[in-house]
Length: 87
Image (cartoon, rainbow, N blue to C red; front, side, top):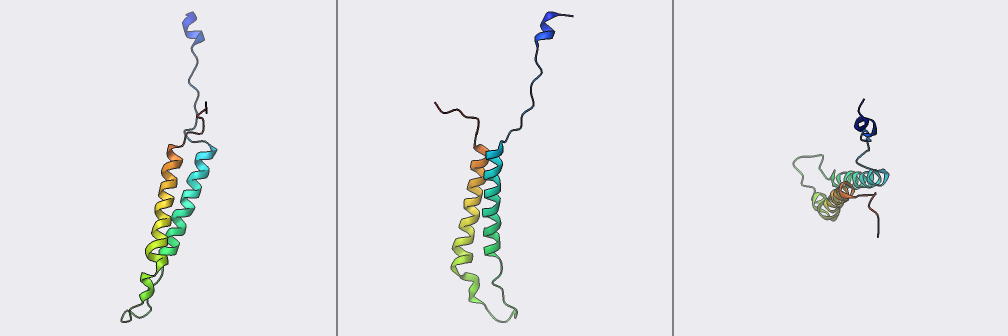
């Protein structure tokens, strides 16, 4: 056997994401789900009657904002490097 081959270490397998990444991913999913839940509803039982609740603040402003915040949290969680050392 060659001495060079004995000292070669096999690469260790590591997960790409750590616990902190998964925590932020979970928080982002909660924001997105809450946004979609708040966006739902507002319809009318009778198709001949218009229900103005479909245009209220919750469905037009709040819910889409929560979805966008959730997507931003997801991007942050993916780009987060928990192993980064502070100097």
